[in-house]
Amino acid sequence: MRVAVVGAGSWGTTFASLVASKAPTTLWARRAELAEAIDRTHTNPDYLPGIELDPSLRASADLGEVLRPADVVVMAVPSHGYRAVLEAGAPHVRPETPVVSLTKGIEAGTLLRMTQVTAEVLPGHDRSIIGVVSGPNLAREIALGQPAATVLALGDEPTARELQALFMTPRFRVYTNPDVVGAETAGAAKNVMAIAAGMASGMGFGDNTRATLITRALAEITRLGVAMGGDPRTFSGLAGVGDLIATCSSVESRNHRVGRALGEGRSLEEVVAEMRMVAEGVKSTAGILALAERHGVDMPIARQVGRVLYEGASVREALEALMGRPARSEVELLEARA
Image (cartoon, rainbow, N blue to C red; front, side, top):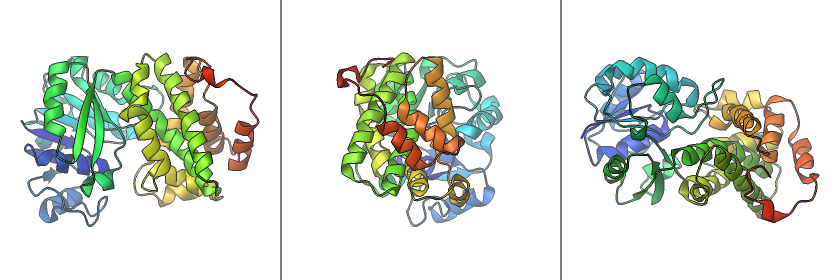
């Protein structure tokens, strides 16, 4: 089985290196010089400097060359470029080839999840073989060989089990789940919450604040995901609370770093200009808020993140708005429109 991984950022490269230990794998990099460096040095000097990749991993900047022989396609392109790259590669993807997204975001304008974008771009594909990998998967830790786990959400069970065996390594455990909607929604929404957690850290707040924020963020994500058709159980698993805890707690999280800088008083423009890789939450917040409005779901934390990102509100103003909300009963935690 031959695997194509499209996107040579930190997570795409890490995932490709993992899979290369199990099957012939080729990584597509947008820039020829990066592809050549990966091939020659078995490292990704731009996005994973100093970490050795599986020596059998190959890289190329020729999208057709990467996709044509592939029996499995893994998409690791940021949400804002996902459609364009997949459209360019579509003529080279066979209809029976499973396509799995690593991207945690919402497409601007359409409000589509990446598996929905995939289905639009590849209309001949059975949707049951279009899936997503999502979980507490900070790329650098996994690239260093630290133990981790994830969820492969995909509708066709035989294909899911085949890919589960392909993706799993002694240090990377893969669970299956048929709930693509829930896993993908959780992955996109947690990026917004990680910005909020970073803001709290930037203001100097401690563990009580972080725990409160994560708990209430999980309630918001669950309400939205269930309203969109997700399984409530998904949000208490790796793709839900697992990913949320990791992203809201780690300095490795790009979204957390953005929020922390904002909490320290820096401007969004300044922070984004300094980042080499995309913080999906900066773009996805608008999409998550639009989906919440469409489905009639209250997401107060996400709304305050949006005020800071897009409306010029200060982090302190956002905090005061959250803490000044009317008193509520906690038993409403998981009600779809609480």
